[in-house]
Each structure stands twice: as structure tokens, then as C-alpha cells.
Image (cartoon, rainbow, N blue to C red; front, side, top):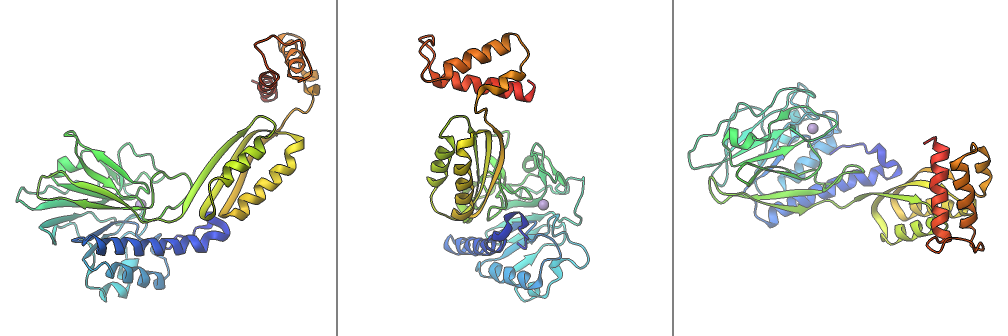
Length: 363
Ligand SMILES: [Mn+2]
């Protein structure tokens, strides 16, 4: 919460509002499914400088869960002097508990929570090493914020071992930091560790964001049931298209149009390949459509001019490449009738483009 969303351009305000709406859906899901409690595993806030009015609003949403909400600080909202966690609104919400110490505490449903607390933006140590739960018949749940080994993430801090659940002897490890839903299956084939991912998608290129996890554990040692619940609303789509043949711009426009109305969609269209001179206007229309149809739309073009005639072959040195280019140019003429029977004009035109690509990029 409090993400500035500059990467969403003029849609930033709607992107921020969507995160509030999605948080309300998390609280509504907690009420509808009568959750014993809710945990937030760090980075609830973008940073410790977010507006205090936003903090008050978020605390209000947490309090609307009608069950206790346990929150650990993450590396973005680390527990430091002057942090967001000192805001007065927390003191006015008795069901919202910010966990500030590495000490186990009892939660409803016969559960013991083991909170790991981030106290800095960066840390190279595994925050879970202190946990070793007893076999006392209670359900033990570890809360941590960090990077499980093998996750590739631009903020590789707070490393967490893959066998954390086994080593700490807990029934479940609830993880924050990574934005996508990801579960870890232990040596016994059971997933006891998972990132829920963010409650609302954050940016382009994420897989499986916009969810909360409903985790049910009947009794100590039982296999956790992990049920993803959709809470997000906006779609951040990346569409890639390679233009090769006449009509490909129009075909790409049709494909984009087929994705439906885009009030809830942010679209990044990446184009490469070749743009024919006679399709430049179509490309301008396509870019306009992407900008107008979606909440946010951006076209990223790596298009190169297509060879409109075979003049480019004049730059080729004499030899087999030049010979092949001349032959393909001849075969690519639809009116030419001397092609071998297994070659169509279309195939020859594509082969000529491939050759052009190799020649123009020096391959
Ligand atoms: Mn983080």
C-alpha cells in the first residue's frame, strides 16, 4: 500500500485505488470464510514514509476482518525508529497486532505464531534460524519476510532455506516479499511453505499475483490445505508480436481487440520484426487503439524497416548469399511461374526476410 505506481503513468491513481479495493476484498474473504486470524508477512506498506492518512485507512480495513490480524514488518516497512508501525491508528485497533519481537505467541484456533521481524532494508541473514517449535499438540506457524533460496528476485535479501518448515518443526511457513504466489513442497511431498503473493498485481511480468491464501490445518502435523483466493482486479498484460508478413499489423490489432474491453487492463505491447512502408498507418492506429482501449497502454517497438524492394541485395558481396537473395527475390514474386513445385511465393518471401535479417544484423 502506498505504491506511487509511476510505471503506470496517468493510471497511477487508479492503480493505487485498486490496491485499497483489493485489501477490502481480503478482509471480506476473511469474514466470509470465518478465518481464525489473518497474517500479513511484511511490506504491507511501500515504505515508512507513506502518508499517515493511508495508514489509518489500511488499519481500518484490517480491523474490518472481524478476527485478529497479525502483521510483521518487512524490508520496505522495517521496524526502525519513526517507522509506520508507530502510527497512532494501530493503538486504536485492538484486533490489529504488530509483532515486534522474536517470541512465540498464541493465536486463536490452537495456533502458536513464530514472528520474524525485519529491522532493516537489507540483511544477509536468515531471519528464521531462531525458530524450533516444540511438539506440544499445537499448530505452529512461522511468519517471515525474505527470499527463499532459488527464487530470483531483484531484492535477494533475508535468505530463507527451502527446508525451513522441517528445520523449524512448524506446520506452516507464511512468507512475504516475493509478489507471486509460490508454494514449496518438502521432502515428504507436502507444501508447508508458501508466498501468497501480493493481494493486487503490482507491475508487468508477474505470474500469479493478486491473491490471498486461505490456509486450513486441522491439527498439528496435518497436511495444510492451501486455497488461493482471487482478490486482485487489474490485469497487467504483456503481449509480444513479431511482424513478418503483410497484414501482420492488422492481425495483431485483431488479437489485441479480442482481449476484450480494457478498463481493468494495463497493456504493454512489444513489437519486433519488420514494418512495411504500406503498414505504417496501420501501426499508428494500432498504437492509438492500445492507448485508448486500456486503462494504460504502451507500445514498445523494436521494428525495423522491411525491405520494400531488393535494393538491399546490392550491398551484399558477390557469392552464395547474393545468389540466394536474387533467387529468393525472383521466387517471391507472385507472378513468377518458374518456382520449384514445393516452394510457394509466401515461403520464398519469408526466407528472403530471414536472409535480410541476417544480412542487416551482420549475422
Ligand atoms: Mn520485501
